Structures are given as structure tokens and as C-alpha cells.
Length: 245
Image 1: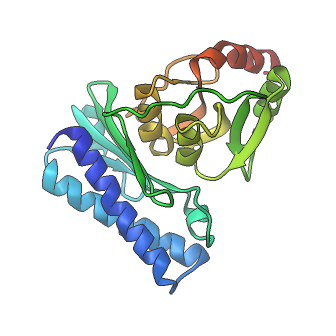
Image 2 (image 1 turned 90 degrees about the vertical axis):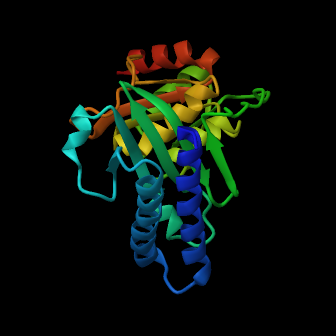
Image 3 (image 1 turned 180 degrees about the vertical axis):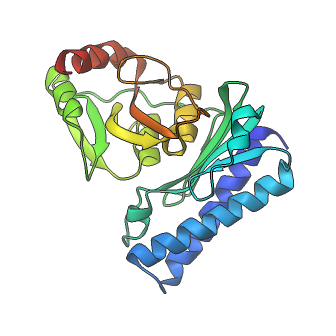
């Protein structure tokens, strides 16, 4: 089984338990989110322990194993990205992230979107639909949209589109439902590793807001900001962000 197949298998396993928990209807809100986090973590850990037992796992729902800093292969995992959205009945904008970092790069990844019944992978890479006519659409957080996104939207005459989890917003660009995702205010490495790997594989631009590379498996789990967009929008967006900062 290839690394990308392992990632997809783990993501599907988590998606199945998350969907099952939600459909049971016994829990809701925070209780459902907490149960989902734990169940999805267990499902992914089992797949990785069976298929890649020698690798280190860096997960939101586990103690940070500092062996990762000297390891050649590290799985960066968010078992349930968008716990709040998952706990709200009917919301689709949550995801499962499984990425492999190896020798300084994200080399394989899968993002499950259980509400859509799909798993996006780095191989075969998704095909990004052609851009729609009209104003560009910039995905932003539905709870804390950054001011820099409004600045960028004004510069490009773009529309801000609030959405849930980071994985959902990145894959909205991959799936053609948005043209860019602008984020400031910080997130963790596991919030973006797998979606960024998939976006890059699909030919999208994924960088820091200053245009510098996104770097993973570094000591600090926190990442300050993120831009994922269609390549033709990268320079106008980065210029707008620089002007507004």
C-alpha cells in the first residue's frame, strides 16, 4: 500500500466513525464534537499503527511526540477539523486531515469530506474546475474573518464567503467553490498540512501571507497565516495584503 493509499484509508476510517456517531443522534454539540475527536483519532491511529508502525504521528488529539523533530517520516493529522461545525446538525463544513511529511516536504495526503462522501488525495490529484465568471470569491472563517481578507477583497472587488473548518475552506478552492482562502490570526500545523498538500498537488498556490513557504514539522506547532488560491490570483492577493499590512 502506497503512502497516499495509507493516508486515504486512514481518512476514510475516521470519516466512517464520525458519520456513524453523528447519525446515531445520541449526542450533539460539544459532547458530539468531543466524542468525534476521540473516535476519529483512534481510527486513524489504528490504520497508521498497522500500515506504518515505524513512523511518528503528530496529531491534534495526541501528546506531541517530540521524536518527530528528528524523524524522517511524520504523519501530521487532524482527526476532526471543524469540531464545532461537526457538532451542529446538518453542517457539512468539517473534514478529516491525514498528511505525510518526509525529509522536509509534504509528500502524500488525503482530506476526507464526509458530508460529501469524498476523499481528496494528492495522487491522483484533483482537477480544479475552470473559474466562474464574475467577482472572485474569498473563503474566510465564519467566526473570525481576518481584516486582511476584507482588505484583499476590496482590492480585487471580491466577495467574502464565510465557511467552517480550514480543511473545508482550502478544499473549497480545490473544488471550485471559492477562488482563494485568506487566513490570519494563526492556526496549527495539522489544520492545514493535508489540505495544503492536496491544493499544491492540484496546481494551486499555497503560501504564507508574506509569500514565504509554509514549513511543517518544526518545533512550534503554530502557523501564523495562510493563503491558498488560484495561481493567477496569487500576486494580486499578496500585493493587496502587503498594502494593507
